[in-house]
Image (cartoon, rainbow, N blue to C red; front, side, top):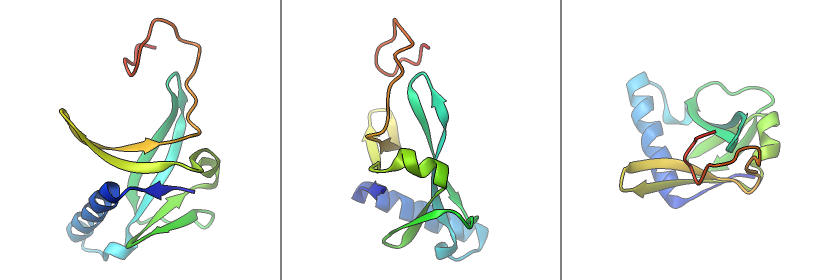
Length: 117
């Protein structure tokens, strides 16, 4: 299913604890939802969100002190994916490394992550 790097685990734990304090709820009642939000010219659009809303048909992945929720539609596209947290010269962000990601061949004249399509 989904794996999470140590760097991402640390950041997710920090986010869960800070958000639970702000909302006045227990950290264990916040989940990390990972989902596919459609597809575009650059392939699958991934999403991450903290939520308290666990649906009956969610797939639950336990990752140490927190749980990851995946809806059944997204699960087929996230099998084998890895959540990472990367730092770079412009800041830091979560990144989903997904072996199921397929780039669209319908765009010409673009290179890398230029987003020109």
